[in-house]
Structure formats: structure tokens, C-alpha cells
Amino acid sequence: MGIFIFFSPYPRFTAILEISFYGSVLILLTLIFLKKTTFSLRTPLTVPFLLFVLWCFSGLFFALNKENSINDFYAHLIKYLVIFYMLFNFFNTKEKLIILVWTIIISTAFFSAGIMIYYYLILGKDISIKLGLNMTELPSNIIGISTLFAILLSFLQLKHEVIGYRKIILAVCISATTVAMLATNARGTILAMIVSLLLLGPKNKKISLFLFLFIALMISIMPVKGRFSPDIMDQIHRDARVNILYCFGEIVKDYPVVGIGFGMQTYDDQSLLRKYNERVPIKYRQDATVIAAPHNMLMDIAVRTGVVGLLLFLYIIFAFVHMGWKILKYGKNDFIRNWGYCFIVAFVAIFIQGLFENTLSGTPAIVLFTIWGMMSILWHLDTEANIYKIDTVENDGLIKSQ
Image: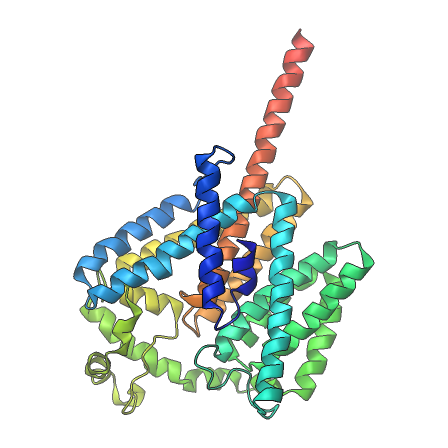
């Protein structure tokens, strides 16, 4: 499973991802059959996941594009849930969780360096052009999601790391990943970065100062500084995504309960999109070609699964936040509480980015389900610690009574 996570940010590595994914499933099934391991589904997210899956499955019968909806139901929901539960079971100790963290950090650093070399040196793009522009397989917003997640993990790992050479490796990884993130010049990523640093900063002052100075230096010499102009709110209001949301909002009005179906290829039907674009007020109407994606995670869910599906998806988020809150308040040690806070911040970041981009397929979805999986691992570790403490108290009491 570690190989799958390592290569998940990379485009055109489909064969490796498929082999590592199904190889992990096969190994797991073999171990379970030989009774060498157990496989647990017990997490606070299981019930919300189940309800959402059942609702999405029922929507397949009413989908506008049934064939693609069935395909995407497996490829972009069931498969990600399998990834979630394999992460939860494979990396269910403190040591294995840190290995997972390092895997993501190293992988993203290599990815960041590689994509910048390819884009600016091999393709010869000018440094003023946002990283990923016109790259259909790897647009700027997608690069920003994976890089910011790795930066946040590096941020906390650097705080806890005590070995000198590992600190140097982390500093190099943060530097390469941060430059790539800023080079995307993606508005959602920049906003998510600011919020994340504001949340993490007070608890990690020394590292925050290092990262703040480095980011300030990069901003001063990179095109991204235009995103920090005083009219940033006006930029958001003028953004084409406002027009896109109006169009897809009209679709929700016609399919409010079960949506148009889970299949994302339904968005490719220009005749369908133009029909609803005509209902939009002229001020917010798109031109000849209507953008074939909502560019908003919540709108995407509402369109494909209806308002009921959106509410169930929000139930998943609520269960995750509630689990994180309990870990922050009642976690039994600093490791659990500190990483719990980091994963909450990472989720806040991808949620903000999800308001500007589709994040429920490909690399963004893997990042999202990885965050949920990591928090569930902490929940497992904390629950295990509580059970051990209770057993110890009970055994001590029994010994004393004897």
C-alpha cells in the first residue's frame, strides 16, 4: 500500500498504481485467509460511509448515464473506501503511521522537483506561467492539493524530529514542495495555505517563522505575489466559478433528490449543460462552451447525488470533525493530540481547496481519504490506549485484592 501512496501524485503511473493497489488487496486477502492478520472496519466513519454508499448505489437506477455511473461508483467511491480501510489496517501503529507520513513527504518532494524541471526546463515554459497551466492530466489546483498536504505533514514532523540529518531532509523537502505549491498560483491553494499557517503557527512558533520567511521570500520573487493584491475579494467575485455554480445550481433544481447520477462523464454532455446555462441570469451566463465541471466539491456532490447525498456527505465530514475534536480534547498523549490537530488543519485546507476545484476523484480524492484514514488510525491508537489503561487498572486492583 505504501507504493500506491508514494506514486499517487504522479500522472501517467496508472499501471504502477493499479498493480500496487490490487497487489495490496491480494496480499491482505491472503493474510486474512491464512489467519495471519485481522481486518477491522470499526471506525467512527464506517456508518456515515455506509449510508452514503447505499444512497449513491440507489441513485444508479435513476442516473442519466447509467453505464458511467456504475463505473464511477466503483472507481471513485468503492475503490477509495478500500484505500481508506487498507490504510487504517496497514498503518495502525505509531511507527507505521510515521512511515506513512514520511512516504507522503518524500514522494511529494520528488514529484515537486520533477514537475518543475519538466514544466520550466524541458517544456521551456516561462517562470511567470503558473505551474500546470494547460496540463490536462495535472492542472495547477491538483498540484496545489498534494503539495500543501505534504507541507503540513512536514511542518509537524519537523517539530518532532530529533535526528539532525532527518531535519535537513525535511527542510529540503519543505523547500522544494513549497516552491512548487506557490508556482501553481492557484487561488484556492493560496487561501488554504494562509488559513493553515494561521492555525498551525501559534503551536509551532519556531518552524512557523522559518516557513513564513521562506514563503515571503518566494512570494517576493514569484508571480504568485499578484494573488495577494488588495482586490483579492473582487477577484473571487469576478471568477468564472461563480457562473459555473449558477449553471450547476439549475441542474440541482431539476434533480434535487437523487441527482443526475454518480458518473462524471455526464458533465461532458454539452447539450445538457447549455440547456441549464440558458436558465441562468444573463449576467452570470457562460459563453458558447459551458464548463463541464462544477469546480466545487459540495456542488459536485449535490449535482451527482442530490441534496440527500450532500447531507450524507456532510454527515461524513461531521463524524470526522467530531472524531478529531475528541482526539484533541481527550487524546492520551502529545503524539495523538498533535497529529490530530495537524490532520484537522489538513482537512480544513483541502476543504477550502475543494470550494475551488473538484476533489472527489484522482489525486485529490486519495489525499482526502488518506487524511480521513490517518485520523482514524489516531482514533484507533487512542482507543487502544484507553482499553490498555482500563485493563491495567483492573488487573492491578485484582492483584491488590488477592
